[in-house]
Structures are given as C-alpha cells and as structure tokens.
Length: 293
Image 1 (cartoon, rainbow, N blue to C red):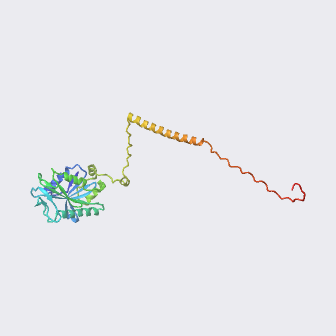
Image 2 (image 1 turned 180 degrees about the horizontal axis):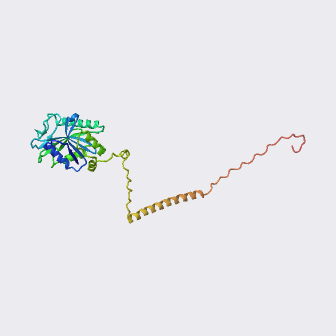
Image 3 (image 1 turned 90 degrees about the vertical axis):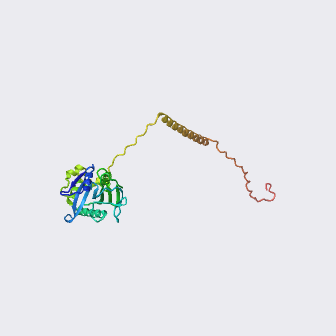
C-alpha cells in the first residue's frame, strides 16, 4: 500500500498511528495524508484513499484519555462510550458526521473540476484509541456511504476490511486516473505511474468488449462413471427379456391375422324357384260345326 504525506504536514498522535496502520496493509491502495482542498486550500482533509474501485475520504479522530467500552453514535447528540461522552481530541464544535460530509463534498468537487468522474465517494470516521484500549463495536454505520471504524496498530483488522470492500464499483481506477485525481487534490509529492502499477493498479483501462462480455470458458464434459460387471450383466438381461416379450406379442398378432385370412368362405343360401305362369290364351273365332273350337 502506498502512503504519501504532504510536505510540511504536522500530524497528531492519532494520525501518525493511522499512517502506521495503513503502511502495514498489503493491499492495492494509495493514501494521501493531510490534504488541503478547495479555494486556496481552505479545507484540511485528514486522508483520501484511492483504490481500484473508488475513493473514500477519512476523518481521523483520537482520544484525550484512555476510554474503553461500548461506542454509541448518533447524528443529533454527542458520541458516547459506555454512557460517558467520548473525549475526542477535536477542537471543532461541529459533529464528526457533518465534518466528514463536508470533506466528501470538497473531494468530489475537486475531482469533478479536473474533468474526472469520481463515482460514488464514500466517507469514514476512523477512531484511534490508545493501545490496549478496547472500544466496540469496531465498525458501525452513520448513514448510507458514511461509516465509523475503530482501529489502532494492534487491532486494525476492521479498518483493513473496510478499505478492501468499501465500494462495490467496477475496477476502473487505473494508474493514470489516480495520478490525475491526486494532482487535482493538490498533493505535490504524489506517486508516480510506475509506483502505482507496482502497487497493483492497472496500467490501462479494460476494453469495452472485455467490460461487457464475460470471459467464456468451455465447460468440462462430464466423465461417465464406469459400471461394474454385475451391473452390466443385469442390464443386458433386462434388455433381452424385453426383446423376447416384444417378439412373442408380435408372433401372436401375426398368427391371429393368418387364421382370419384362411377361414371358411361364407355359404350363400339358395333362393326358392318360382314356377312360370302359363302364357295367356288368345280367343279364336269358332264357326258352326268346327271340330277344334
């Protein structure tokens, strides 16, 4: 992880502890510490973290004394630890959540002025208790996009988890974009392109086709399981019985059809004969004393 502190920065004890936490993380990220953003550098921002997935703005808060217990945070009231006011080393009267929102707006505005799309800029308040002090929960949410994380060098796991997964955006922050964004934020001793690539940032943006089409990988063909010899014999036996049954049914059908075709012919009963009627007699004229009349 690359960490660059602005030349001439005067860090508090909590901020130095925060920088030591970052330098112990083996992750791809660039941290710009102690930035002055806005017109004439009017707004001081504790840290800005840039990962391949996006930007998060950090407000680092330490403690004036050792406090341990249950952390309770609200937007409207003072933060407490086990019902006692959290004694933070912050001289500002504004709530930490309001300060963080203003810093997020300033960073987004500066990046947009450099004609870069900042995407969704997140924010986090990092509380740095004294070593050996336990404050729980180690991570909680203020509002969507704004979180609170408790960390110090011996117990920085939750901070590392937050940095690795604070944004679900695409991996489109390349080395060139990070260099341009850091320049827009006013960090003079920013990282070089080679340093960012060595840290894990991509040298070039992914092509449009690669971003749209997922990688096509051939699916492995399923390998049939070899069957054992008893199972093969049983399968062939079932097939043979089925074939014999089909042939038997076919033979019965053929036999019945042959018998029906060669059976006795139908007998036609003789019809009764009707005697012909005698021919009609034609009357003859008879003369007197004619013998055949």
